[in-house]
Length: 233
Image (cartoon, rainbow, N blue to C red; front, side, top):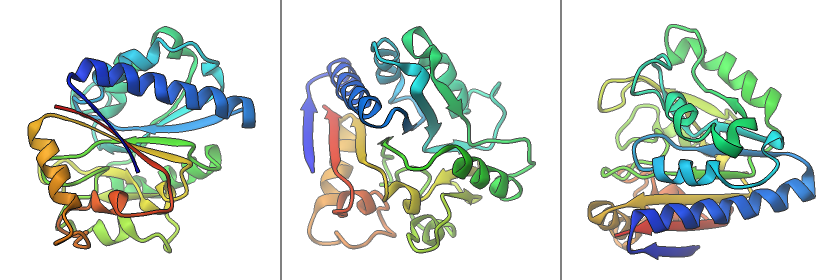
């Protein structure tokens, strides 16, 4: 696990964008096509805008989401809306975007369509940029969620999972550890004093194996996928 800590969120966003862009260029040269997954919320906005300006062959990049609230793209809670407004512009306007939300009434109803589309268009994720919540969740893997065991079941094989008991009451679709555990490189991106404290708690030896309490530990304690931390004060 490599760690990068910055004094400001702006410096973090710029460096994270440059680091990921360099990896994307190398991956395009090596394999001809790149698949990345990004997170929603407010934290990635600066990073998205910096990434959108990076000069690379975006026509060979597929972008999907780590997770999505089951709302229309006109809703301010939509992660797809966030990506379209802040990432799919400038140089990155040429990228292909694969949303997780479909026209089904709920993520449970839309699960099979979402799963099939992921398998149709992605062979393997190259890079995923994860976030972290103040409760120790990442993706839509929430502490105490009835969906958590399915989200983290690497042997089950499903690449996405509906989550219907999210704390704010908005049903979601999330990528699973079965997909992310085969990613070529993971990033964990977070900012601020409170999330730094959560991060330190997640790393403490006592409770380090209690994934149910802090699901982000799934990512922090694994050794299958190279992980780089980008955090700011």
